[in-house]
Length: 251
Image (tube, rainbow, N blue to C red; front, side, top):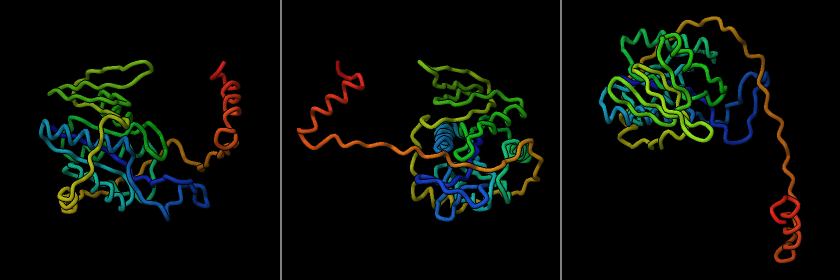
């Protein structure tokens, strides 16, 4: 079984987001980089499936040459091969999907399972996996939180309001993964050492004209929270009771 997982290098934004002066990107001078929890779950699911069924796992990313950091992390989790589509700037979903499609064709492999994060952690486009599936004429199940591979078919589960939807699709197929599909492993020391020795297949894809262009980024206006101190100790009890009554918690 051949499995392809596509990931994206994104900044770690655990604190306040600061934009560059031209509002075209997130200021990353003092930030580390990672890939999204959705994609980390996709890598983990691929590794588990390979451990069970055998085969080869390939991780792919499109981005700067520094993206090999994220590729090697995925390799340290258990993936076996890596492809870097090196670019000098961030590409939109149409160009990204086209580059991935060309890389798949150039690899000479037939991938039984193609996995993407449900959406990019930075742009939230929800597009690349679906575009790849459509171009390759493959079935696609989005937002999955359960996956079982059975030879030439797969059963995928996604959460909906009040329950689940279950899909059975023939392989090869595309799946976009949501965080919660599994609990990703932490790479072992031998895994990290092995990942350092893997040769990354690097190519520079030709850019294409996008249908949309980015004008600028905006940071949402922060809403200040209001805090009222009701008192200290037992003296605050009457005000707490009054507050609960006003909120409808007490009759």
